[in-house]
Image 1 (cartoon, rainbow, N blue to C red):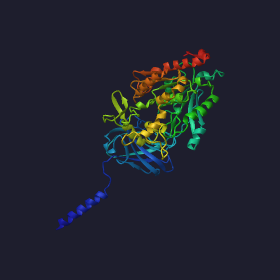
Image 2 (tube, one colour):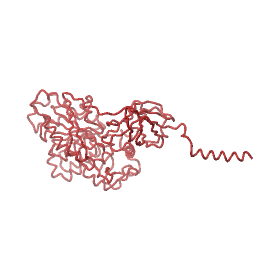
Image 3 (cartoon, rainbow, N blue to C red):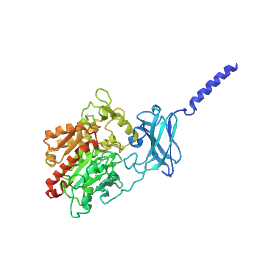
Image 4 (cartoon, rainbow, N blue to C red):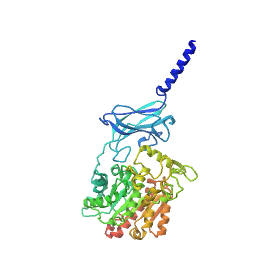
Length: 501
């Protein structure tokens, strides 16, 4: 009789435990808090835990493994828990292999600037290296990102001007920022005027990076090759990534502000040749695209562009996708396999879907999202309209029609009668055959189009070099020789300063 009463009671207790159970023991979760040194006030934003299976790396910049949750009015000292319900990339938390990782927590609360890890106002934990097992990991965010002052020297100067065009567009003050790198002769020869090279870094580069040692200056050969020139190294970051100095619905009149506000300021405050032929352009990756775009859209304002490894210049091969083929899908090849995006040799590092999924977590401003910020129309929610569906990879044909106005090859073909004569001896493009993002393929299509138009554009595809320094090291001497030849054609009096290095 007693046994009959006990069994129903045990069943009832078991049912209750399904509804009121304690968290599963032995499950991985990250418990994150921040200190009052970061903020005395509650924080709202997105909290990330980033990991890298290379203990020597900084996981905030490699963005290899990401977990994230959104917080509102998060109080100092309180813990936020990231568990298997958190947003994740590239796999769920309960699938994370037990291994040694470098780990950092980060809170992103800066909505005004792109630069997820190090935008001013964000905060992060100290780097930890630990064996991740199936147990809670506690991290404390105690490092605040502050705006570091630009360290000016006799030859490194910072320029920040408030743009009326951009401030009117955003409804708040917007600055154009740049570092000016002067040749050593600038202070000695006070009556001499110099050619100026407007230089645009690749994604993640900012103007103040130029003063952090010689790496960037060596890449672009600043005052180490050819005749002396003044280099103006421009930031082009914005809330939606990089605006690339293209006028757009989402980022505002960036090109107009540069040409009509910034150039006159430089020419008023520095001894640069105040003429189009004395203004040259160069850049890397997204910055290379910017330099080419500015030369094509403002042909009367600049005397030549030297883009290296530019982002897609022909949308018939946009990172592997022919945007004008209605059968194309962003995520999948026509045989159904995932489309590679970043490759190293024969190995796929990331697919299109990988990067798309990752940027859903990291938020606006990522490399791929940048394209929509520049090229897409503004949606009803004031955000750029998606070109591809984030779940399916399906391409929005109406958005592609809008993007056509930024297809440089198409712009040149449609306006060649006017642009052709203005761009004579002004286009010099370099890329490597093994570019990590397959950016050599659109260059090949672009080259064929230029040949058919009768353009004299100089296009060199190197056998190897990847996407960055591997290309620059091979071509920087040639680029400066071309720049100097171009300048001497317009300003023969500069001959006495040529070939002195």
